[in-house]
Image 1 (tube, rainbow, N blue to C red):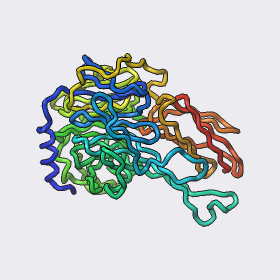
Image 2: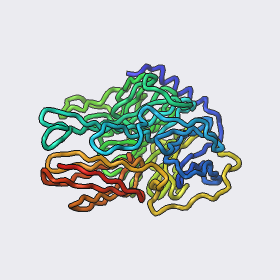
Image 3: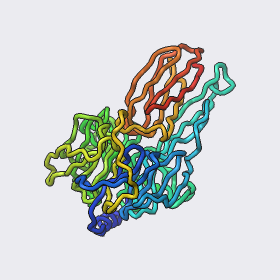
Image 4: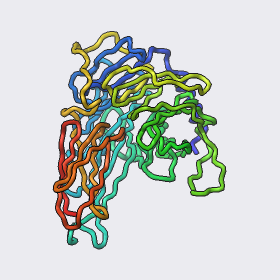
Length: 428
């Protein structure tokens, strides 16, 4: 378990935050915007049209995902304060079974602006007896891993500085040295865990009430409110109230048919439905939150005493990647252009953003095609010769489709997302 002293650190951070007017950072049409939560003021911060996501520190400094697997640290007036790669930025994808990373994705800036946590995914192809590059037909054992990495926010940081965290993704800073991570990608695991900079993992939160794997989980700074996206199709956004401190809370026993009486660390207050949710961001006060759907970014308040709340109002049509912080919106915009209108893709990446990656792997009875986009939206897969499939890419920015293919047959799979197409070939 994490030391109880972290509780003091969290509460100190909560009360020490200056009483400034809040702001919500988001990406719209590839550019970064800042808006007051009530929508009364909105300013455009960048004009390159190339950013995929953004987050902000308490002092208003921002980090944004730029093309070429780079991170840009931005000032409030749009100046690039730092432009750097990460240890998992390994360049454009190569054809064939090549071990490679995908990322950084979903970068999140720490409250003090000194560190950035981001998601990574890894494709690994291994040889085993009877299945290798020299076997007939040639084959490999495909494994995919995921996790979170941490870098300093002022430039490239090697992996020796912070451990490469595996399993849970969706990083959210609770304090300057503690992360909340959710969605492990495995069964019989907690929905969310607490992780220190040293890599210590403390199992924390699990929703046993048809959560079906709650992700994008955030815990308020006063440790009282939890939000997360639930449901098999991300169709539920749930709000919870904690029942005990997350530090030192009892672990959930995931053993099937266990005799242990598990204790819930949070009780569900209410849930929003009627759509597909992509992202969440709690207000520093823990009394409101922003969330993203294909329609754009919404803002809603959280009632007291675990009472039911509503969907709120649409703050920015067509926008994505909301991040709520305590810094005020600048008085003027460094950009004179008007905000872009919503695209037909509902917030999908433009052609100038990161090109999707397609990987093919053999499986029993055919193949599996995995498309990594880095953003939600609609995608199509076309198997030649064969069929065509249309699918929805969730907020993870990744989707897999299985095709039945006869053994020994050589096929081509073409995937299209956000107006961009990528293809790959494989002999099954």
